[in-house]
Picture 1 (cartoon, helix red, strand yellow):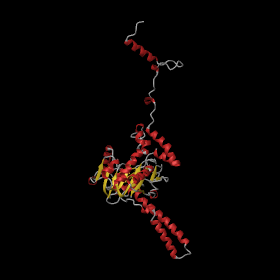
Picture 2 (cartoon, one colour):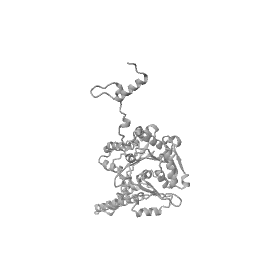
Picture 3 (cartoon, one colour):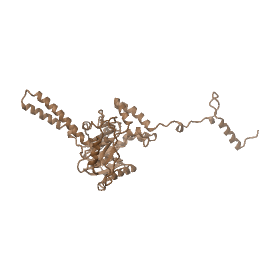
Picture 4 (cartoon, helix red, strand yellow):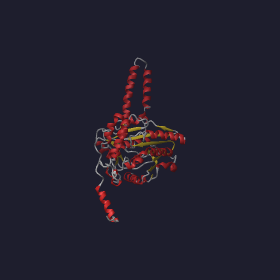
Length: 418
């Protein structure tokens, strides 16, 4: 038979390929019949929200134990919001409107409730003291009352400094009423800013004093920066975020809520916060370090921009290192005696307590800086009617999502540079 030409050989090869592999039982056949399934194209893709929930089920069930089912349900349900009143806009009628809907300013109400509770406890103690000394002299009763008053005066909630200028309204536990959208006043400034009310706790913990130089190291999208301005006492406020697109969002927030003359006093930058010590080290009285994190609620609810997407695995694994670097930059940016509040919206101890412990160690060993971790346990007593706190937090405080008070998660810890 005459030899096949080039075109004939090609046609014959194509015919053989169309026949496919040999029938079962006849061996694997020639290599040309084999093929590899393209898993990347055919395997089902697991949504990042499902990956996040599986990750949390494995890890948070060990951390939170019996609390995890309740927290899990809260994460998967609609988030609750608070209305941060804009002090740069006339707010009296707004507060009146919100109070008619049974909303209350949780910031101003908390110290009042704590004081009433302590007065009641002190009265009971005095009563017990009087019965104990009813057979004794009046002097003994006076001494007992004096001791009781001293204990009451030194109790943490009365020592806590909560800015009375910040006003944030929330609905009671179990009330899922939604706030109306914010409205502009005659000058075009919006009357309130809707945010997770737990996000205010780091700002309250920072306890800004008159003329303090304040740095918001990871400021975008701008809710906490706006809250810092609502205190009305910042001597200077620097707001920074590494993301240019998120910094644009910060500008939008400032433009929507803050008068021009106040906006011009805010220094907005877009640089890597890890390098801040090289720019303005040791210059601030107060620094807020609200770091990038796994944003647990977003991670289980939204596929868009989800840190649990497979292509962002390395980024997620490096988060604790990034957080540590940012916290160290915040510590180095403070004056001696200055204070830093570190915060995340994650339940993860790897992103929370472990970052604090490592930062304290590095500050001491590498920079010869002594750091004191402040006790914030009084926040639990002050705000127990509004938020659900995790009692097992070793350092700082952690707000847990709960169906009746579905704020958070929000972790915050206060450090003082000695």
